[in-house]
Image 1 (cartoon, rainbow, N blue to C red):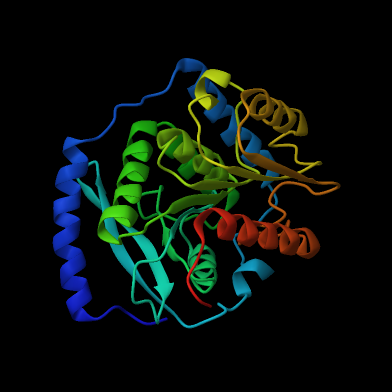
Image 2 (cartoon, one colour):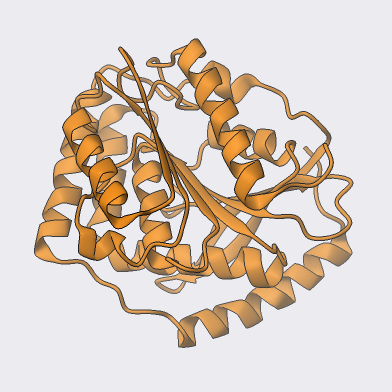
Length: 302
């Protein structure tokens, strides 16, 4: 992993200052209803049950090397609650013109080294990747710590919304990405869908790895974002019934979507961290992800 040049850093720093001012002035007030907040809190408890005996150790997914040389660094992309937010910014080292971008959203452990590895792995496929931080710079190594971080995050939804709005502004305005997708696992999978609903016409694709979903057609109706959903039939946190209701709502609304359910798979079968990894299903899900992103974003040479 190598750093950007000093010149690039200076340019990005100036652009970030301008971006934060614009974002602060142009932020959309979204909020959430009582039912939505209750569902988010319930999802935290469901994730705590699913990960009760899990660890934050890297899975095979996080150990794979990028397909080409990648440049990556820790970079401020937003300002939330008067604090700069740092993400992991990665792109092919031979990039000349801006490439399509993927906003990558971490699982409930936070923006750890495993997520950074996944960001670099995806960048090696020919994308700009911004792995965001929704936990204020904190990462968890135990299920109880992860539960506390996730609970704190869902209780501050407006801050997370601002974070994602600025992440989108960063990749489009500062990085110059012509097309943008969101992608996340678990907690991040739910926020991948939330990002699509924040940018229902602007976002070009969204990948949801067993994240919290909804069948509320009033929320899904504005979506013009193609959706790829990857779920396990035996997931007790993101239950199959909720996945089928989500799928049904998308079908009734005529939305562009692909829902893949892996028979026998539990929660977190493709996570970058943890003990629930299923190599066969994770490989298939990753290949589907790459095909989906290529179809809706295109990519640079690899």
